[in-house]
Image (cartoon, rainbow, N blue to C red; front, side):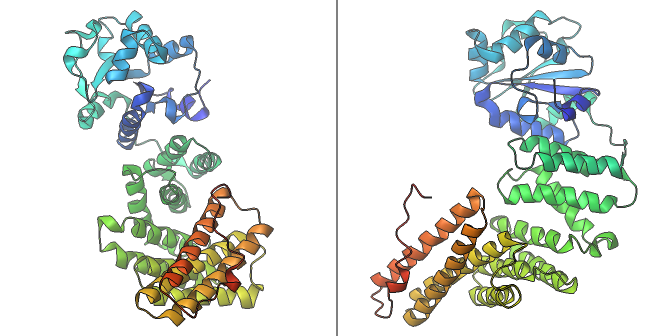
Length: 430
């Protein structure tokens, strides 16, 4: 059986993509493009269960609602047909056996790099048109019968259900399925009070997936970001005490990650980080140290290291004075503050070394070492995920390298006695 999302897709007109596994990247790009242009698509990396039986596959592509089967012909696809190998051959054989003059327009050859129209099997000679995968606009036009009805509204309850389903597969490998659930929320009208908040949450999840490397930057990420910016100016969101500061941080981090594409993003990243901090203060957030940390990281990303240090020390002061070193209800964020603080101190130390200000560099490294030790202690208390542990070891290695740089600079003031518990990193450990 198909999963619930695809069960709902095949109740309406849809398109199926057939491809060789070696051509997954091209197939994924086409899938994203079609989905972003409102086309219902069934695609095995988008949720079709592996091991679908041939009768089930036949039932799928011969379904009246299957308006197009896009066959991505690359050299591997052709080779598997020629030598009758694998799932590609099985799919092609079924298509060949069900190919009729009345339905020949349903099966569309799409040419990829390394393949020309002359390379196509005899089956397609003079009987159908073909498109090149680079001509995506034409493919959308061919698939227009499978367009999603943009007028079909969702209730607030239905939209929330899509959010819950997206959350359920957020940490799995089904990133495309997660995006599909969220795309429905972004593109469908939503009737009822609270629609803006639901849409903002969907946008935020997509942006977080991009920021954490779960998905690449794509039209749906860009769409989600632009939509969130507009939503943040609405009264319904400006009073959202539960989420507004976090959404502002997401915007800041997006601008920061995309700085190489537009230098003006530096000011925008700082502006949104400052707005997030102000709103967190205004709303009386107990984890204000997190927003100070984000503000510091934004400054550090643009070499404003003195401002970064000031914000990190403020974050540390809150953690130390109000929570005795860590917030027991939010250990993950406490660890994040200590790791980022240690990293910023290392960057400042490197700058001091370059400026030949060795005493300051030594003080900063001692401070970094102290912060990293705090993180280490809390990592032992709180069983953090592998990503956080790798982050810790990466910063630990940076600290060691900077200490080594101090020695090479003949810093007489550097003492290694307090650094004894930071040995060279064992690759096996990391």
